[in-house]
Image 1: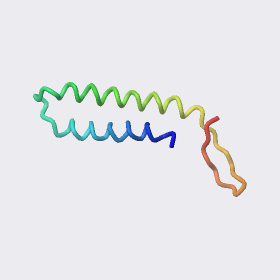
Image 2: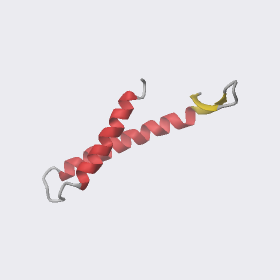
Image 3: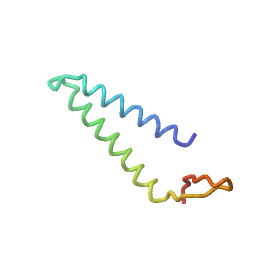
Length: 70
């Protein structure tokens, strides 16, 4: 449930990427789409950088390895 807002940004980033592929470079919205895509990718990169160092492996009683935030 906590990842739902981030998932929405991820899906929006994919939509922006596809929209940009199908938008002619001379279209007036093309630079705006590039900026929006860049901003959303930078946001997702910063989220990933913040999350990855805090994850540590945890072994469950059944021997399964899970990731948790440390």
